Image 1 (cartoon, rainbow, N blue to C red):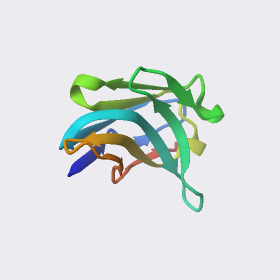
Image 2: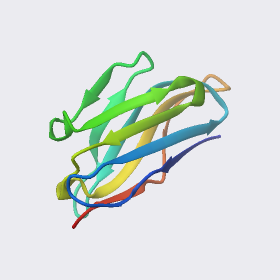
Image 3: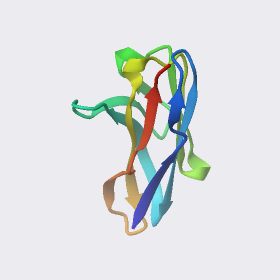
Image 4: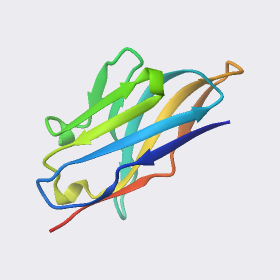
Length: 120
């Protein structure tokens, strides 16, 4: 079994910064892509950013230039540095990882989410 645990959410004023972390643990052989998604109240879950095992990144247009995704392969951890936050960034942020398990199955895992609220 594999678990993803997010941390770092909270309340921040517009223009502020937060750093989210997501650590994967369990029966892991390797991790392919990792990413962050978010779901705002009344909206569908959307992709925020992804990073491959080689460090290639991709971002939704609305966060380009403000958010930075990175990963530490040795720690099986992915980060999301969020700067210049806006009220529209308010959402529950979910971590996602495509994991090659210890039994060599390729499976998709999700964290339980961490709430980010941007408000004055």
